[in-house]
Structure formats: structure tokens, C-alpha cells
Length: 69
Image 1: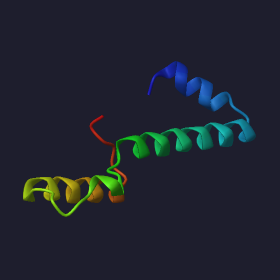
Image 2: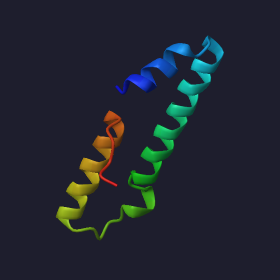
Image 3: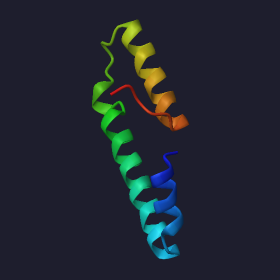
Image 4: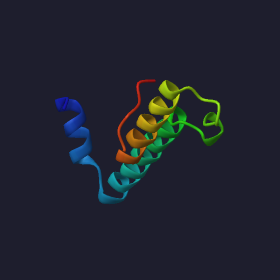
């Protein structure tokens, strides 16, 4: 990590550190939601390739990995 960032984090009081953690978690969850496959994206007429891609995307989201957006 950047030393200035490290210094800033170490200087935070516990309540502010917790608020920072909550904010970071909320941002990560929002970004995951933006790149995640949506239920309405899945349908019976999908090609085999599209079904595999959807299955891989669902697995990625369940593992908590970041998308390629």
C-alpha cells in the first residue's frame, strides 16, 4: 500500500476506521451488483455458449470475485 494511505489509516480512531470499512464494503457490493448477471438475462432460447457464459458469471459472483467491467 501507499505509505501516505497507510499513515492515514493508522491515524484513524476506531469509529472512523469502522465507518471506512463499511463504506468500502458498500462500494464493493455495489460494483459487484453492477457487473453481475441479472435473472432477466437468462432465458430458454440462449445458445449453449451463452448458457456456459452465464453459468461462469454466476459462479464468479458466488465466489465473490470482481468482474471485468
